[in-house]
Image 1: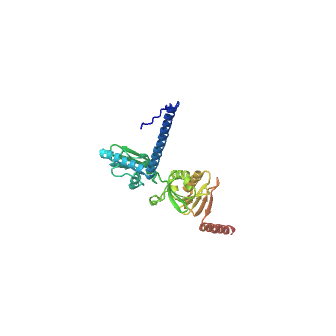
Image 2: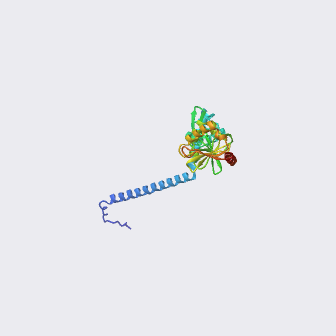
Image 3: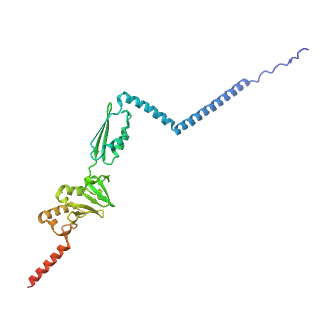
Length: 292
């Protein structure tokens, strides 16, 4: 049997068909590429977030940093000597704790800025400097606050500096000889008291406590029980007047309860009851003598 052959001629492809098929293939390839890129980006982002959230990245960085740090230290740049100077009331163990050094730490890896913040955060430290001394030493220089007074507020005592800043409320026993000031705001108004102390130290040595009254003036309580009421304006001049009175008349050795210097040009004395009674009897006796 003879094969049947189709003698019809095949139709030629339409014009532009090849170009259309090629364009479809390119579009499909471009779409696939975009989707594949999107998937890769999503996987990368998700992986990065996971690594960041899980702490793996930080752990890797710390391990790398530790490895470098150990290498530097083993090369002879490990912190060996720590020189601390200038501290008197700050304990060395407090400074060392603030430095937070560990054995074998390289001197290159030190975060001096944060170390300085921690050291200057100690109660007595006013200012500090930290310097690397290559290859293996660290120099810490401390300037401490100067305590000028004991400030009492609500029954609590604090050491304060000349600006009234609280230094500490611990270890006060060595400072009992400092001026004792009492009241809200007393710590912020020390300037005139310190000037009075500097000018007349012997007179000020008789002061037991200084009370800031009404946020505007001082009452000085002396060790012998006498109270000195100073004016709001010119308290230093009133203190000078008291010094002159005591030098010439020994007023502080007399039976006086209160010396009121608040009124300009006047000095008002309040006597003890014993002295007041003595003077009344003396006056009566004189009056009787005059009447005879």
